[in-house]
Image (cartoon, rainbow, N blue to C red):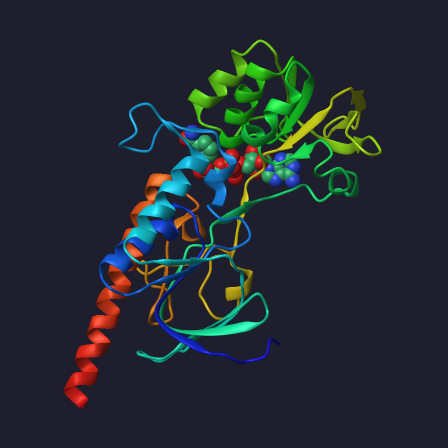
Length: 324
Ligand code: NDP
């Protein structure tokens, strides 16, 4: 356990720096909660791994993800948010209304916060095969939009049958020579519209009932051994890139045992609010939303979390005044 020293006391701690965290910061700063944000391992969150964002209202020409995140940060800082590079590695939440919550930064420094907004997002899942792990960064990627460009004109494969896989397969098909798409069942989970996009794209070779047996290559990917899970038949294909698009895991490990979560680890919030089971701790963005997962919905819940935090602190302050 990290040492407790140099304890700084703040009104509002924001954990995570995606659209949810920054929107919470803008609202909290404007409400004079003097928020301090710790960015986490991936400052800017998942949108920094995206190119064009065309569906965030207010950008008629679209905007690229990293620029949008820089602008959100500038907007949050304009109202006084302190954005700090750092990872919250441990938390100790108080169960009392008005209690002080503690968070450890980078296993070193503790901060105390009267309210906490959690916006730690979600992380891409991998298959877990040793050959896949060995070649991560050597041709195995979980983000077609980030890395697809490197495979221009080449043959690649993608794993997954959801909307993400369908979207990324069609994205890759625009750049690459051929895309082999592996779907483990005899149907795709993706929406009908997305399925149609896949099946009507000529250079996508869609394989149902097919999974990865082994990723081939020593330093870099040079092939894929696929296995048909109905017939047991194996087939090798030559590829230079393998994209994994099998869903995300919410970043909630540090909250286990303290915050209520569903069976897949997403934080549970109460009713239409962002309240968790701990007074003064609020959750926003993908960490509590496995359904919509959009930048704009994350931003919306970030706003809600800051308003919930502001109301919570105001209630406590007025109770303290009454008892004083
Ligand atoms: P999903 O959980 O929807 O889909 C995951 C896919 O990966 C499923 O086909 C699943 O197969 C497959 N899978 C899971 N584990 C493995 C494994 N070990 N080996 C092989 N295949 C595996 O995740 P998505 O990221 O696609 O989507 C998440 C949410 O985001 C959804 O609600 C989706 O609708 C939404 N979204 C919407 C978009 C849009 O509207 N434009 C774009 C992207 C996402 P199986 O079906 O067999 O379980």
